[in-house]
Image 1 (spheres, helix red, strand yellow):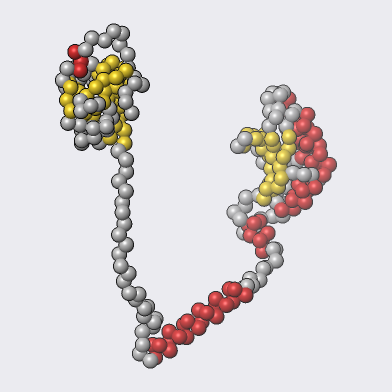
Image 2: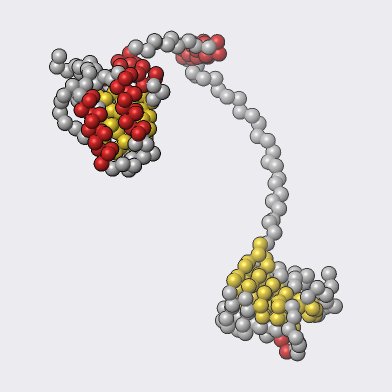
Length: 292
């Protein structure tokens, strides 16, 4: 009858279609609408043309609206197994599902516009939705609230009781602890005319050439030669220090103290040094010997 799909039918001669085709990550064996013996012969011929080519591939037998017997299914699996192909699934009408289940294969319902799926869902038993005791109590609470609102409106009152506004509480004085200054890292040589300034410490991985300037509120550390201007403790911290692999600045400042001749010293060999304020003047000590 027009508008209804025919029931699954046995294999019979029909339109010619490709019996073996790639689909996704596996193979699809098209069996629908054709005589099984013809399909099996054509499948064997195609596999023999390229022996070993499909070995290791999973396969799905697509039957459409055709049916298949247990004996035919086993013959099909035997042909595929002989070429290293594993039959993993059947696709077709719902009548094939028991066959697939018994053979340990996955089953996929034929995509026919949702007709089979709708019929399958219609056969499922209807489940009656039952409310729990907690849910029923909520329904009663909502019904009571609606009745209370209606009564209030009849009396000319507001639908909802006015909230009681609490007396304002005295504000709590919060003390914000200032965060410690961070450290500015600079990788590379500072050439004449270049300058770095930072609230906190400054660390330079490289040389500071004459004409370059470093200004920090904390310490200054130079992993290289310091031959420019360095001002540590620029906001008045006399405990700040200047460290360098080669300490030969054109001008050295710590807080309000100035040492303008720090680079004129003769040092052989060059070794790491530390400059700090000691006895109300800037003093330079070998690394590890500066007073604490």
